[in-house]
Amino acid sequence: MHHSLNLIERPGVEIEIFDSTAAVGDGEAVYVAAAARPIRDDELGSVSHEAFRTTAGARIFQPEDAPQGRSTPSLVATARSYEVHVVGSHPVHGCGVDTRQPADPTRAALAS
Image 1 (tube, rainbow, N blue to C red):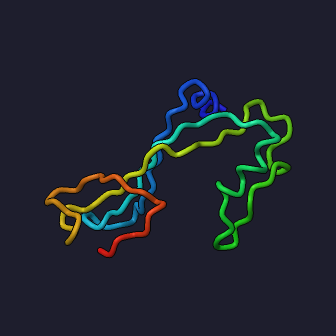
Image 2 (image 1 turned 180 degrees about the horizontal axis):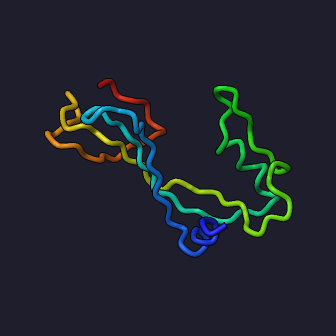
């Protein structure tokens, strides 16, 4: 509940996705800056297909899956920017030190 209330008051969200089991120097990560906002119950069905992919046996979250009588609203985050972690030794994009570089997930990946 506190997280939801914090996001309502301060909607800026920073999301980091990484493999914590990667060896030092082999790390990869994606960073997403987003803005969170409460959504109405009647909006939940229209955003669920974007937020929940049906890969690896997962199923789409349905409005009826939301806890009944919840005291805080459901939230949705809209991405504003994306970055990737590039290891300094990367043969094409590296610059000697690890960096975060802008990324566009709508563009095809470049060969590394």
